[in-house]
Length: 461
Image 1 (spheres, rainbow, N blue to C red):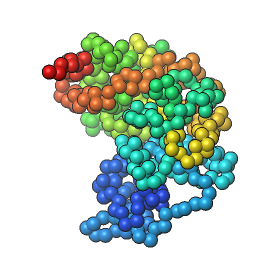
Image 2 (image 1 turned 90 degrees about the vertical axis):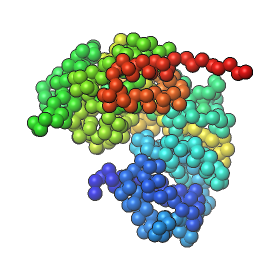
Image 3 (image 1 turned 45 degrees about the vertical axis):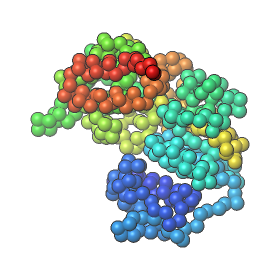
Image 4 (image 1 turned 120 degrees about the vertical axis):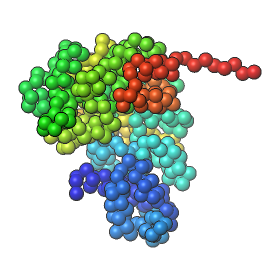
C-alpha cells in the first residue's frame, strides 16, 4: 500500500471515529454513502472503503447490504470527568496535520487535567458543520480556519474579540496579518502561520541539466528562457514529460501573475489583463514550457521532479514533508513590474458560547508563544513572529517571500483583490475555454473585462 493511501484512509478513520464517539453522528444514524464521503472529503473510493472497514472492525459501525453503513447501536458516547477543550478543524489542512499536534502536546503538558478533542470537517462545509454541532449540543470552544473561510462568516458576534485579551501576542505579529481577521475594527481570529504565494524551484533539476539557478534581479525574459530550457521529452517518445514551470488554473495562483502585471480586479485595466493572459498562453501553448494543471497534478508533478518551478506556498511545501526527495529553494517572482503577492493564513478563533473560554484563550496564547512558534518555523512553516523567521530562514529566501522587512507591504489577502466569491466563480467559469487553448487571450480578456466592469443598478419602478 502506498504511504499516501494509508495516510488518507487513516485520517478519515480518525475523523469519523471522533464524530461517532462525540455524538455528532448518533447511534443507528446512517453515515454518508461511500460516494458521498469520497466527494465530501476529496478522497478515493478505495480510501473511504478501507476507512469504513476499519471502523467496522472496531465495532463502531454496521454495514447493511443495499442500505449502507450506520453507527452501531452498541456505541457509547464518551463522557469524561476531566475538562474537555473541543476544537473544530478544517480538512484538508497541512497546518492541522503538521503543526496542531505539537501545539496540543505543549498545551496538554501545561494542563494535565484537560483533554483536547478534535472534530474535522471539509473546508467547503465548515460553517454549516459548526452550526450542526451546536444544534446537536456539541459546543465547540475553538475553530481553526483560513482567511478565506473567515471572510465567509456572517455573524461575528458568535466569536470573542481578541485585541484586549491577547494584546501582547498581537503586538508581536506582522501587522498586515491581522487585516485578514479584523471586522468592524475588532480582531476575531489570531493567525498562527501564514505564507505568500511564491515561486519555488527544484535545485537538483537545475544542477542536473547544467542550468543557472534563479537569482535576484532576474526578469521575465530570463524566466521564460529558463523555463524553456527545462522543458523537453526525456525518453524520446515525442511527448513532453518535463516542464520548466507549473501553472495551476485556480484564481488564487494565477492572480499573482496578474497582480505583478499591474492588474486590479477592482479597477480592471484592459492592457494589464491582456498582458497577463497573453503571457500565460504563450508559456502554455506557444512556447510549451508551462504545464497548466489542477492543484493535485500541480503538486504531484513537482514531487516527482517533472516540473522545475511552481507557484506555491511555504505551507504547501512544508506539508509535503518527506514526500519531496529534494530541498526546494525560492526565487523572486519576475512576472511584472509590481512586486505584489497573495497572502494566506491559518488562524484560531474562540467561540462566544465556549464553556471553557479561559482554557481556549490559554490555548491561543500557547499557539502564539515564541517557543511554539519556533517549532512551527523549524517545521518549515512561517512563524507569525518576524524575529523567529529571521533566525530560521535565509535572508534571500525571506526577500523572495516578500517578508524581509517585517511589514508584508507587498502582500494582499485574496478578499482584498477580489472580494465577491460569486464573481470569483464566474471568472473561473469564463476561463475554461481559455485554459484549454480553445480561446485566444484577446477573446478571454474581452469577456472578462465585460464581466468585471461595474454593473449598472436597475432602478425600481
